[in-house]
Length: 376
Figure (cartoon, rainbow, N blue to C red):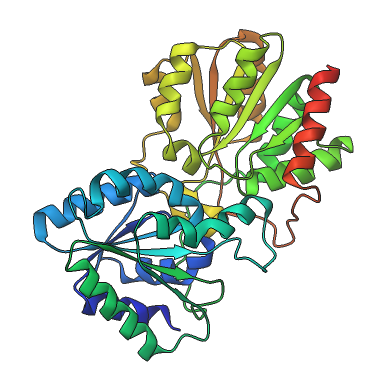
């Protein structure tokens, strides 16, 4: 199915606003929305999926028009609260259409963080009283039109409807190209971090390509990755995992290697961490201004730096760097100061086409990591 046809059908049922968080399964759809560039739809990338439900609620209150909210199925956890306590027909009855990328589809090989989420995707929608359909590369245009007609009728009753999208549903089309203007390559930055921190610290890395690149770089440099806890799921929670470790044993140096999209998703963690001010926690934010791991759509951040936000929250030592030299200097300064620090690293939008994935399961990574922690 062409993503353009799907968007036309969305327009036909009265939707004019599209909002959500990007997903690799929905890449062709997301590209088509970006290429529309406001001609037909208002489009907003929100901090997290629950925020998109809030935006959709406001749109309906002001215009009586339902919104389309798109997300990866991992984002279902973020929408359950506003869906149950605001949008549900037993509360305010706010109609909206969900378009959900189905990662971890049963019977299909996928990354470990998606396996359980994939199993419970349909069950979660059922328990939340959200009727749904599932589409794939065999779905005909006439079928899609009928499904969306049913969705329109349900939304007229103040209900929600979900379209679950399997991998490969949308035909490849014109990609939406965007560059952020930064020159430092992320893998170069991660190498500097490992060279100066790995042997004396424990690292907690965020989901996506950051963890995959750290995994390969660490193996290349040291022959192992046992000091890295790769948070392959739970986007936005790596910094709190790192704090949990830091407060459990103040003698250990803990480094959180975060992503800009992940920080934005749960930015309240910055205020919490600043209030706690653990001296043994170094927070490094790799900022490419995009959700690169799922298609490189811009995050929608205001353009202020995360270092500025962290400083406003109360981090004692913050800086923004653009080169390997600046990064090394900032890391050494943070080690010397021994106070809650945040280093924001501005990096380009690129990664190797042959970038691998961890060979171990998530559980095996956890066991290896804990073994290393307990030995030191």
